[in-house]
Image (cartoon, rainbow, N blue to C red; front, side, top):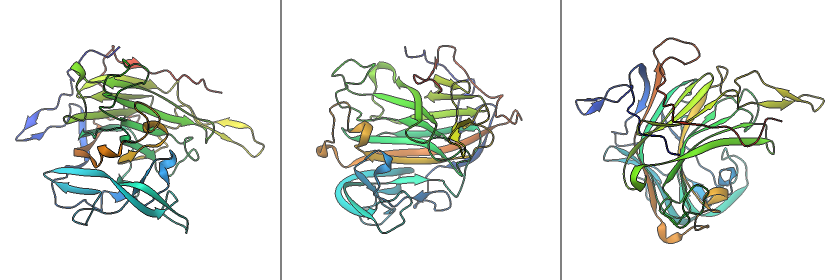
Length: 338
């Protein structure tokens, strides 16, 4: 069931064309994308063709701004991330190092704040217009910087918003077969390193069948010590609680050891932001109409702003500023803790 619309007590108020901070939250970092070039002090553009760990079909290139064929640039007060149908060769490793290379049939961009800015707790708010087309996979998400509990997914992953194949005939659970795909998803990844990684999340559909590819919407996540909440346009549609997530590692004897309660989304962790547009892969390429429709490309994800807030209530655990709707879904993992 989709939660009823909720007008946030932390409503955004228009002030001279700008927007005031949500009530109780203090703005601590932002990018309004009003300049002429992507700020390298805020964002790194990845350079690799390793497939994102999901067998995706794009290479992420560092082509930016006024470079020919750029995959990321600023214009009209927006960040544009474009996926293009073109063969491209590049490093086959996540960090872009080593001699191995791969050639893939699409290019795109993945921007991240790693090495520049990371946060523990807060409100993360992004206004964006998503791409459509079979094979498109836009994402607004967070990864741990430093991975205090071990490699992915033991140190966690926070997906603020993902969508796949918007506008394509849907075949995923929860949608009427054949209707256009319009849902966005919020998810947590945690547990152990593969193959013991697990995930739990849910989806949200805009009112009246609206497609997120047709207009801008505000995607937000609030993170505190024991709870993570997801919002679209001020609607609180889902929450997860610390009693359901966990992190485990192996000791020298091979025994699985539990990390402290609340890990990996706790005070010991800092997460950085990522914005990207993937093509195909183990999710977008396997659902809806399946595969990639080359006729749909190029596709562009447009981001109006990214804003990060901290709760001014002063609690070290990040609590005190939440806006909750009792109708929001309480996400319970399908996979129990081993």
